[in-house]
Image 1: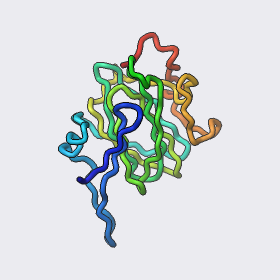
Image 2: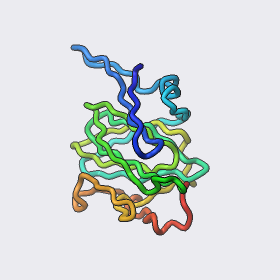
Image 3: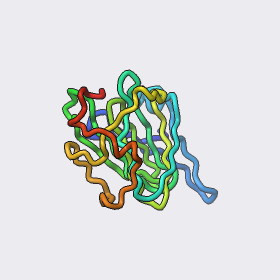
Length: 185
């Protein structure tokens, strides 16, 4: 099997460890194989790939797309180091508003699967970092949404001090979870 799948306490979240074949030339690894993911219970179909590059102390997120274009994501860091976070926003979920964070890096090669219904964000810990991720629905501007990265109702423990955070105006203006008139998902 080219992957190891570790299911987390928050239902639906999975850490994926690809097996790399390393020798004096470098390495080779599969980063996605539909049959292996389906065998592991991940049946989503990915329809779009995204790639971002950010500098140290940038936080991107917490982003999601609202129904009917809610996205599942398969995230990995291909250069540098990020601290990647998922927040359960599935109404009725026993883990609603709970979050999970982990370090993704070019060195550890881990991938993080988030099913639809989760907000996603990351903090850059290295001088620069590049993340790539597959999504299960194409970007739909009318469904774009998110919540603030520092929402006290969620309480994410980011590994960057608040006075060092670099964040976009758009992300700075995202609503608090408590201000949403209706749930996203």
